[in-house]
Image: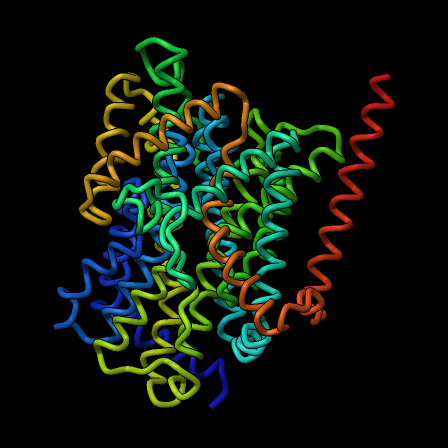
Amino acid sequence: MDTFSLLLEGFGAALTPMNLLWSLVGVVLGTIVGVLPGLGSAMAIALLLPITFQLDPTGAFIMFAGVYFGGQFGAATTAILLNTPGQSSSMATAFEGYPMAENRRAPQALATAVLGSFVASIVAVTLVVFFSPYMVQLAVQFGPAEYFALAVLAFLATSGVVSGDVLRGVTALGIGLALALVGIDEQTGTVRFAFGVTQLFGGVSIVVVTVGLLAVGEVLHTAARSRNGAATETIVAGRPWLSRRDLSRSWRPWVRGTALGVPFGVIPAGGAEIPTFLSYAAEKSLARRRGNSEFGRGAIEGVAGPEAANNATTATSLVPLLSLGLPTSATAAIMLGAFQQYGIRPGPLLFTEQADLVWALLASLFIGSAILLVLNLPFAPVWAKLLRIPRNYLYAGILVFATLGVYTARTSLSDVVLLYLVGVLGFLLRRYGFPIAPVLIGVILGPLAETSLRRAMAMGQGDVGVLFGSPYSIGLYAIMVVAVVVMTVGRLRKRRVAA
């Protein structure tokens, strides 16, 4: 039976009333937990696992997929409206989404986010359905050297292109890498940067750093430079649909973001953070070349591209999970545990032994994306009215949710203390003009870069040439060289013009 016929059978199973209900419940729950900082879809699925064991496996996984997709947009909502991403994958969205909200363009930012999410999800799921065998081959060919090259490319993009000021960007990246080194080294057992504090032996959680820098740091920064009052003095609800000009500025970033996100979901290279930051860097660089950049003041391209990359990565991350039993994100890892609890073993035989479940799940991804669009796009102006809440109540609520989210993640009071210490760091970085993005990417990808470098050097017995031993790694380093040359030439031209 061909792929198209199997997909039609999957739609037949997914469109039953009960499975449609589970998809709707999943999308709604995912959106809710995505809004709350520090929670996210991984925790939601983990909490739902004990409840769903009485369900049919197909219905349970359809709901899990809805939670997974819904969580991505919920995180983007608070990133745009409050500069507080619900998940680390929406960090890049906040950089331009929040300035758009401050400029009374919150509905447009939300609309381009949900439309970009829908377009990227549909394209990515279609590719998953018809080209998953080729994607699996790509995943298998990536080794430690390629992962290290990916991490270095992300470091370059965030510290050089995204931040604008290379020196400040590199300094911020160093801070992030230092935070990533805190705790016990998994390979040697050596304690690093813990300063004798036993609570730091386990390292600093990514949730703590993300919420501390973006939520608590933003609250402190805002409190230090403004008084009480409405979050935005005049809110124009606007239309939930994009204008023709907004659409013309968004569709190309959607395409580029989708193209960046699709391959990153297949390989375990740090989740959606790398493609979202690379998308943001690409859009910012293209805007500079056009000479009409609004980046830093609310560029719609800076929302459209990263959100498309984020959701494309989410969809294609199911390829290695279903085909190899290899999770490429925290949420995928929880779903792998759910498969095992149901006595189902993901792998190459899953598409034949559990064909009904797999194709119903893939069909539900199309359905969940459509539900997400229908539920969220018409309500973009409603979400935008959250900005009418007075600042003192708004930011007090952010602190409460941030604190609860961080405490719930590991039920640790020491994490709450770290949250506010990192928040003070975020405040100081903003106060003195240092970019936040390199710190975040350093914390997230620092362990991946270190582990990959060690493994690659061990495989090559200390020979540095192993880092350049495949066409993939050579291609990634070539991209870095081109990026450095382009940035250098651009800066020299600006200096000549200024002189």
